[in-house]
Image (cartoon, rainbow, N blue to C red; front, side, top):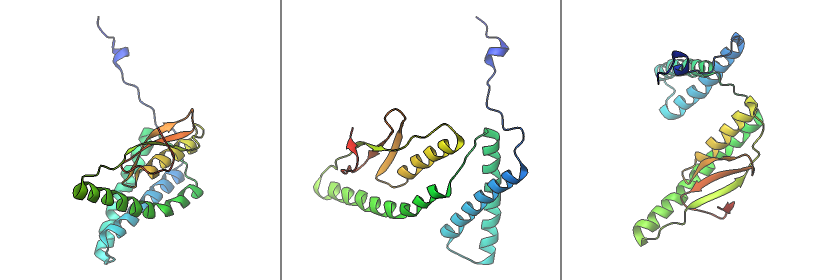
Length: 175
Protein backbone atom coordinates (compact mmCIF):
# COMPACT_ATOMS: atom_id res chain seq x y z
CA UNK A 1 0.00 0.00 0.00
CA UNK A 2 1.59 3.30 -1.05
CA UNK A 3 2.20 5.93 1.53
CA UNK A 4 0.94 9.34 0.62
CA UNK A 5 3.33 12.25 0.73
CA UNK A 6 1.22 13.74 3.49
CA UNK A 7 1.81 10.71 5.75
CA UNK A 8 5.55 10.58 5.11
CA UNK A 9 6.23 14.16 6.16
CA UNK A 10 8.18 14.60 9.32
CA UNK A 11 6.89 17.34 11.53
CA UNK A 12 9.09 19.07 14.00
CA UNK A 13 8.41 21.83 16.44
CA UNK A 14 8.68 25.26 14.96
CA UNK A 15 10.83 27.87 16.60
CA UNK A 16 8.98 30.63 18.40
CA UNK A 17 7.90 33.25 15.91
CA UNK A 18 8.90 36.34 17.82
CA UNK A 19 11.55 35.98 20.45
CA UNK A 20 12.77 39.41 21.51
CA UNK A 21 16.27 40.19 20.33
CA UNK A 22 17.24 41.24 23.85
CA UNK A 23 16.33 37.79 25.18
CA UNK A 24 18.32 36.04 22.46
CA UNK A 25 21.29 38.35 23.14
CA UNK A 26 20.99 37.62 26.86
CA UNK A 27 20.96 33.89 26.16
CA UNK A 28 24.04 34.24 23.96
CA UNK A 29 25.80 36.25 26.67
CA UNK A 30 24.99 33.66 29.34
CA UNK A 31 26.41 30.90 27.12
CA UNK A 32 29.48 33.01 26.34
CA UNK A 33 30.23 33.69 30.01
CA UNK A 34 29.83 30.01 30.89
CA UNK A 35 31.98 28.80 27.99
CA UNK A 36 34.65 31.46 28.49
CA UNK A 37 34.84 30.48 32.16
CA UNK A 38 35.43 26.88 31.13
CA UNK A 39 38.13 28.05 28.71
CA UNK A 40 40.00 29.96 31.41
CA UNK A 41 39.74 27.03 33.83
CA UNK A 42 40.90 24.45 31.30
CA UNK A 43 43.54 26.55 29.55
CA UNK A 44 45.05 27.79 32.83
CA UNK A 45 46.52 30.87 31.18
CA UNK A 46 45.64 34.54 31.24
CA UNK A 47 47.97 35.51 28.41
CA UNK A 48 46.21 37.98 26.08
CA UNK A 49 46.51 35.77 22.99
CA UNK A 50 45.06 32.80 24.90
CA UNK A 51 42.19 34.92 26.21
CA UNK A 52 41.44 36.24 22.71
CA UNK A 53 41.41 32.71 21.29
CA UNK A 54 39.12 31.60 24.11
CA UNK A 55 36.82 34.57 23.61
CA UNK A 56 36.51 33.78 19.91
CA UNK A 57 35.90 30.08 20.50
CA UNK A 58 33.37 30.84 23.25
CA UNK A 59 31.59 33.38 21.04
CA UNK A 60 31.23 30.88 18.20
CA UNK A 61 30.11 28.10 20.54
CA UNK A 62 27.65 30.45 22.28
CA UNK A 63 26.22 31.46 18.91
CA UNK A 64 25.74 27.83 17.91
CA UNK A 65 24.22 26.89 21.28
CA UNK A 66 21.77 29.80 21.10
CA UNK A 67 20.89 28.98 17.48
CA UNK A 68 20.23 25.31 18.25
CA UNK A 69 18.13 26.23 21.28
CA UNK A 70 16.13 28.70 19.20
CA UNK A 71 15.62 26.27 16.32
CA UNK A 72 14.53 23.48 18.66
CA UNK A 73 12.04 25.81 20.28
CA UNK A 74 13.43 24.82 23.67
CA UNK A 75 12.63 27.15 26.47
CA UNK A 76 14.73 27.25 29.60
CA UNK A 77 14.13 29.17 32.78
CA UNK A 78 16.84 29.01 35.41
CA UNK A 79 16.42 30.41 38.89
CA UNK A 80 19.49 31.62 40.75
CA UNK A 81 18.57 29.55 43.81
CA UNK A 82 18.94 26.37 41.74
CA UNK A 83 22.49 27.30 40.78
CA UNK A 84 23.48 27.79 44.42
CA UNK A 85 23.56 24.00 44.78
CA UNK A 86 26.23 23.83 42.06
CA UNK A 87 28.75 24.96 44.69
CA UNK A 88 28.58 21.46 46.23
CA UNK A 89 29.33 19.65 42.95
CA UNK A 90 33.17 19.81 43.11
CA UNK A 91 33.07 18.24 46.57
CA UNK A 92 30.73 15.51 45.34
CA UNK A 93 32.99 14.80 42.36
CA UNK A 94 36.09 14.62 44.59
CA UNK A 95 34.34 12.39 47.15
CA UNK A 96 32.90 10.06 44.52
CA UNK A 97 36.26 9.84 42.74
CA UNK A 98 37.82 8.65 46.01
CA UNK A 99 35.02 6.09 46.48
CA UNK A 100 35.40 4.73 42.94
CA UNK A 101 39.22 4.52 43.12
CA UNK A 102 39.04 2.80 46.53
CA UNK A 103 36.61 0.24 45.09
CA UNK A 104 38.89 -0.23 42.08
CA UNK A 105 41.86 -0.80 44.40
CA UNK A 106 39.91 -3.35 46.47
CA UNK A 107 38.86 -5.11 43.27
CA UNK A 108 42.41 -5.27 41.87
CA UNK A 109 44.21 -6.05 45.14
CA UNK A 110 41.73 -8.35 46.88
CA UNK A 111 39.20 -9.36 44.22
CA UNK A 112 36.33 -7.75 46.15
CA UNK A 113 33.44 -6.67 43.99
CA UNK A 114 31.76 -3.48 45.23
CA UNK A 115 28.05 -3.57 46.05
CA UNK A 116 26.41 -1.65 43.21
CA UNK A 117 22.77 -1.08 42.58
CA UNK A 118 19.82 1.12 41.89
CA UNK A 119 18.47 3.57 44.44
CA UNK A 120 15.60 6.00 44.63
CA UNK A 121 16.03 9.57 45.81
CA UNK A 122 13.00 11.68 46.65
CA UNK A 123 12.68 14.72 44.37
CA UNK A 124 10.00 17.20 43.44
CA UNK A 125 9.02 16.47 39.84
CA UNK A 126 7.41 19.86 39.26
CA UNK A 127 5.09 21.13 36.57
CA UNK A 128 5.39 21.08 32.78
CA UNK A 129 6.46 24.71 32.35
CA UNK A 130 9.81 25.80 30.96
CA UNK A 131 11.07 26.28 34.53
CA UNK A 132 9.89 22.80 35.52
CA UNK A 133 11.60 21.17 32.53
CA UNK A 134 14.81 23.12 33.17
CA UNK A 135 14.78 22.10 36.83
CA UNK A 136 14.40 18.42 35.92
CA UNK A 137 17.26 18.71 33.42
CA UNK A 138 19.48 20.23 36.11
CA UNK A 139 18.45 17.49 38.57
CA UNK A 140 19.47 14.75 36.12
CA UNK A 141 22.73 16.51 35.15
CA UNK A 142 23.67 17.34 38.72
CA UNK A 143 23.07 13.79 39.89
CA UNK A 144 25.10 12.32 37.03
CA UNK A 145 28.19 14.53 37.17
CA UNK A 146 29.96 12.66 39.98
CA UNK A 147 31.61 9.39 38.85
CA UNK A 148 29.86 7.05 41.31
CA UNK A 149 26.28 7.95 40.40
CA UNK A 150 24.27 8.23 37.21
CA UNK A 151 20.63 9.23 37.03
CA UNK A 152 18.48 6.75 35.14
CA UNK A 153 15.35 8.87 35.20
CA UNK A 154 12.62 10.60 37.15
CA UNK A 155 9.38 8.96 38.23
CA UNK A 156 6.60 11.53 38.32
CA UNK A 157 4.12 9.21 40.05
CA UNK A 158 6.32 8.43 43.06
CA UNK A 159 8.26 11.72 43.11
CA UNK A 160 11.61 9.95 42.97
CA UNK A 161 14.77 9.93 40.87
CA UNK A 162 16.11 6.49 39.99
CA UNK A 163 19.92 6.44 40.18
CA UNK A 164 22.55 3.77 39.71
CA UNK A 165 25.59 3.75 41.96
CA UNK A 166 28.77 1.88 41.10
CA UNK A 167 29.52 1.62 44.82
CA UNK A 168 26.19 1.64 46.62
CA UNK A 169 25.83 3.55 49.85
CA UNK A 170 22.98 3.71 52.32
CA UNK A 171 21.62 7.00 50.98
CA UNK A 172 18.11 6.40 49.61
CA UNK A 173 16.36 3.07 49.63
CA UNK A 174 17.41 0.14 47.49
CA UNK A 175 15.19 -0.70 44.60
